[in-house]
Length: 358
Image 1: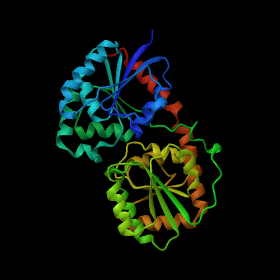
Image 2: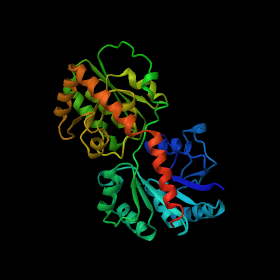
Image 3: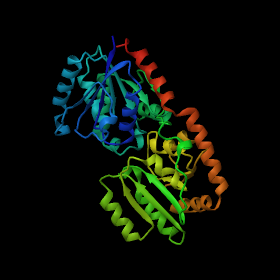
Image 4: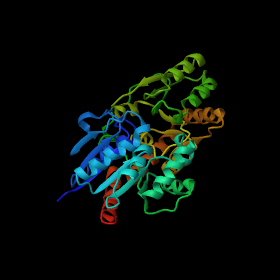
């Protein structure tokens, strides 16, 4: 008889955590997979292949105790064996709702010490108290993220693992890439939600120093900061274009000369992994997660110095051999370490080890 896993997440917008969940579920046919969300936002449509999709239609996070009661009812109704949560609010609610005889697993998707959300004292307080109330098995998307979760919240680990985020090499397959079109100038691409964490304003400021360079940056993604960012781009009169949300980024990536990302923090960036798989060289902000993810396969710049970004960009523009070396090393690193096959194998082992240890 199949065991039942209830996967609980905020919503199904096309973020990194959501994309990871949808792709992993396809590889878990030996389980009944129930996906539960707080909000009714499913941008994946038919891509979501699960036994059942349920939205709790949360009106406000202030009512989360009532949502916990609704979740507890679902756990009992569907005889759930494992509850697997993603992101803070679903985790908090699940820690309240999940009976002690049901395995509770939480994936930590970011380095929380630098997370905007965890700068709020009540978020740290609620996470710490709820963990002590119901210790969940912790899976970090990077070794550093796992260790930091416990050290930052001053918690004693119960059971913890590190399973790297992955790239779908079936979709992000360099050998199937459309031949690059001849373009004028040097083209840069950045992919990510238009949110404070992604720090796109840094790129606008840096591009003020590069107005005489034949370069153009296309930023793909949507988010609440779009109007503010567009105003900043217009005011600075720089060669940056906001391209909106797309579903064919695997086709677009090879058409660019360089991938750039200026995040102040990340978990284990899916966008970076996809870029590595498509053999596009990278210039990234010098943060802990990018260092762990890429090692020596990217060039890094300081977030405290726009000139550092500008200088390193000029170096990469003028040195095609360097770009080719970086992209080849990045491709080999992702194929050998960060595939869906690697991830699912380790995740199934976590489910197996903990399903009877409640």
